Image 1 (cartoon, rainbow, N blue to C red):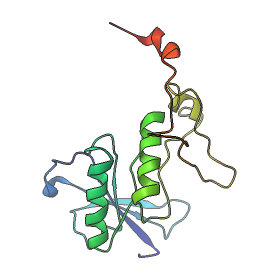
Image 2: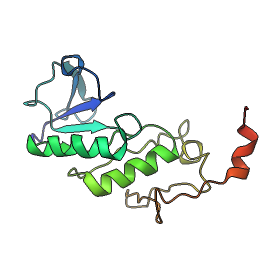
Image 3: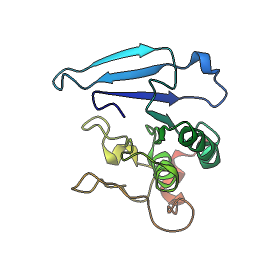
Image 4: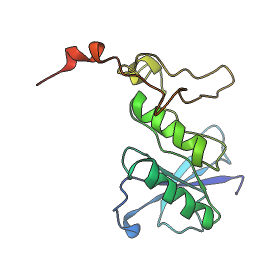
Length: 156
């Protein structure tokens, strides 16, 4: 991977035509400012392919995209910017499928805190002091929903 730029392909929908995708190149040569540029997608400029298990066919869909990335000599890491359930699913997918050293975590306080992101969960998914985050332990996603706490949000 080029140490001065990182090419990201963020896949929004599995059925989006390849010609419609854009690659974001972040220039790391200016650490104070950086710059983004948008280019036509070619696997020459793409280093990391990102998609969210919530939007591309679940963990199975991400498994297929991760395998294609690997065949092309690229890495895959989940694109996560949703709620705690989405983060938990993407963390499990990252542990099982990712060949990239980082994972995107929706956390941008004060507006987007862990508590706000995880409001539907019975607990908060915490980022450790060393910057790591683990998926919840246990079967499935590792989360037992608190249905009583969610009852006040019922609309029908």
